[in-house]
Length: 213
Image (tube, helix red, strand yellow):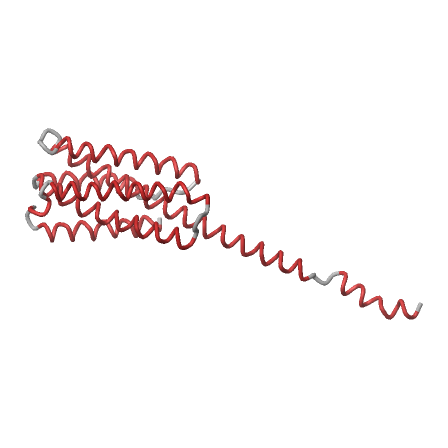
């Protein structure tokens, strides 16, 4: 009896002592939770900013068409806008699919995009194409940055498979728009370098803020 009494504290302590396997499982669960949270945050940010960008691009072309729709470059602008509408609709579907939160600034980007497109078109077709070059070059660089980030942080993950394919496809189409702008004499627009720099600064600011809110 004395022997049992002496060993009782040992058994009681070890009964409630976490085992090594339990500790490992707890750490694994916590790690998985952190990874899942980071994955969700990245998805939310990428979808939010890309949707905002495509909304802006769609409205830029809408503004250009309002001024140049009946000109010789009208059909070219319409073709580019048709692709942007497809991009916009695709990201709207992905946002619903992944339950991401769109930017609260969508009304602003709608108005700002249309005004930018119309204003540059009023300066002539070359200025409109300069706007296209500036915007599409910025979007192409932005998409490239996202592709690298996803491939570095979540390589081969099924959740990012469709998104990665979509971004690559849209990146290539945006760069085609850039080439179209150059083909239609964007670089001959008045104050081309200054106009391009101002527009790209605005685009980068819009990207930055749309990633946040």
